[in-house]
Every structure is written in C-alpha cells, then in structure tokens.
Image (cartoon, rainbow, N blue to C red):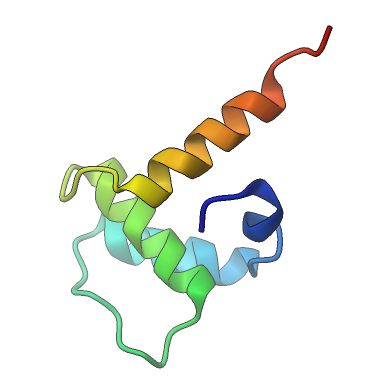
Length: 72
C-alpha cells in the first residue's frame, strides 16, 4: 500500500485491530487476515519499535505529506 487512494479503501476497524496487535508484539498474521489488518499490524509493529519502516510505509507517509502541503 503506497497511495492515499489505496489507504482510503481499507476497513478502519481491521486497520485498528491489526495496529493494536502489532503494537503489542503479536506474531505475523496468517493469510486469513485482510490487507487492512496487515497494514495496521505492520504500522503497529513499526510504531512500537519492533520493526523499521519499509519502502511501502515510507511511500505512503510521503504521499500523505504531499497531500497536506498547501498548494500555490
């Protein structure tokens, strides 16, 4: 997931559930979990210091930063 448009299609509840699990050090989820859950889990792990941001996380962060910049 690298774009804001892609991020906005995710289920917020799954993202939050995954984030909390990742933040608390839960092991990698199985293939039965959604992309939204995986996204949250990866970001939770990163925010808790268990992992460094990967290239997709960095690209999405940059996309949001560009979106927040005033135009003109």
